[in-house]
Length: 75
Image (cartoon, rainbow, N blue to C red):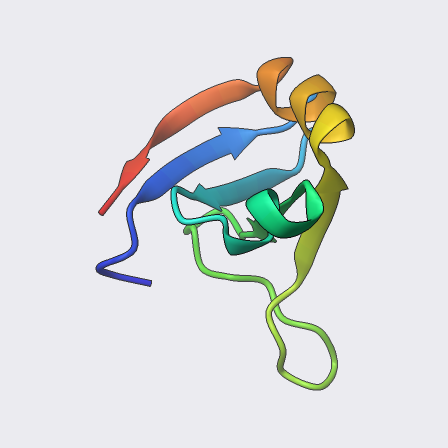
């Protein structure tokens, strides 16, 4: 996860995510990708070992993230 700056955010529903500053899907598709993390800020993984992600339309993202709590920054 190092070398990719972003923010750690607690969403309105209580889930904790990392939102990286680099959002390649935002320009092309108006989508924001958030990575779900545990209490130690490690990525949560699915049964196949892939990182669990939330993908929001820009409007839904603004509702969830802007209504959440910024916990900190990562670099």
